[in-house]
Length: 87
Image (cartoon, rainbow, N blue to C red):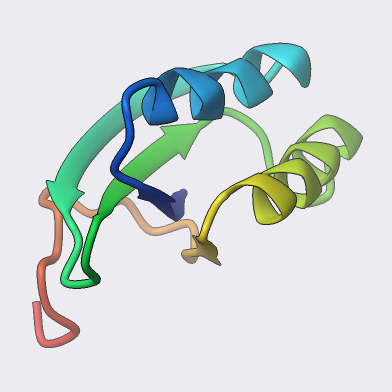
């Protein structure tokens, strides 16, 4: 599970999804929310694979270079999109 922050521009989500396709990583869930940062959007993404998988490692490196922020969350499933750290 990863939390991605990207600039709010047309095509931002498509460019993020292109990285998943390029690295052959399957998405299982995606949610989006406006970020508290100006002109940014947050994407909460669940995907198949672990950090030990080469394709996931390469994906994360790629995302770090091409998004404003990448936060890798632990493997626990969260049934909602947290808006605040207290959630």
